Length: 320
Image (spheres, rainbow, N blue to C red):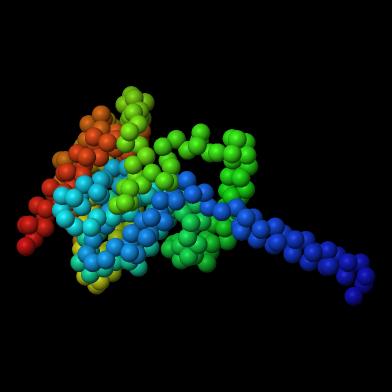
């Protein structure tokens, strides 16, 4: 082999080894942010692992995290209740994770935002959000829709975000509190409820866009997933229910009564999972929303939780 070729190959190996060392040191040296909103997912995981016996488990996006009071449900019903809601940007990955922690006698209440039913890419999860979630528990890569294909890209995004976080922390004087808003990972109670917004003033209702909910076209893959999840849960001795996401009156009006009703009709036709709250009770007044068309404020959270308790009791009583 010519000397110049050997020199080139040696340089290439050295560069690759240096790159691997730098990447390794970055991953080892920059730890997950303990105050990131997704840090709460470690509490959720611990609750799923450590809470014995039969539980009520609430799962979905931030409409669950912000908008259902698991502590109030537990106090009212006398049953352990876990709020496993986090962010719609994770798609169905948290439901895949939940499958591993189902106990006999569990009651699982799924509340997914409408956009997961409308768009395949939303259902599969946003790579940026997924990378943040997986950073707190690397084995979660197995919950991706296609782990072998997606994992390299997820870790590339994670590396970039670790570096960006370190740079931003320096630029903001050693703390990211200024950019977190209410999304602080230490603001979860013992049931997994997010509480960071409960003492804050709600956004002016006029500033929350009254955009239609994406209920006009539902894609079929999500119903295939939900039916498979329902089957697995039943085989493990659990019951599954669907609860509509927190829905704001102005956005419901912009969507239209017929399209909203058709969404629930389609769900009933394509899924064997019972719906808890009737369509007529789903849309809540604007005054109960915090900052988006899915996030409830303290008063809205309490109202929705009481309705959920009432409707679950009605359904379980009727089925006996």
